[in-house]
Length: 125
Image (tube, rainbow, N blue to C red; front, side, top):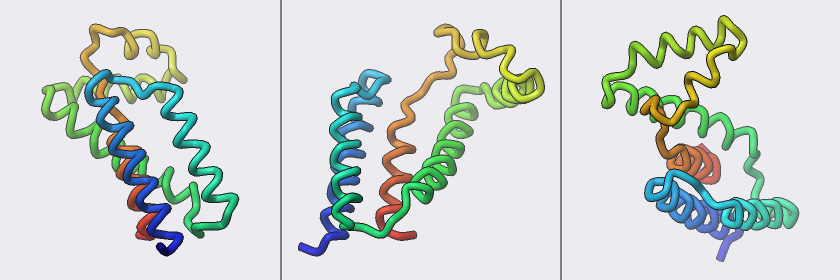
């Protein structure tokens, strides 16, 4: 089995597992994060891929931004979310407590965005 196939399979499997848990519980357990990290570091140390972690971060940010906008639109919160984001930037984070309160209805599973970003990077796009 070619090395890149192993990397893609590992990324896809970890993405499915973490996304499923995050969608169900709104958290990814530390033991899963640690396991995925260990596999990723091992594959990188063995030089089984030439993909860069920076690419995964860029794709994750793009997918995460699209996901956040979609969730805000679906929940009818786009205008409010953009206002809160502008306030966050302008004030240097003075409204973090207000944004993070549980009743704000702004939480969503982010593992799917991470999974998609990592998979696109592993595929070499």
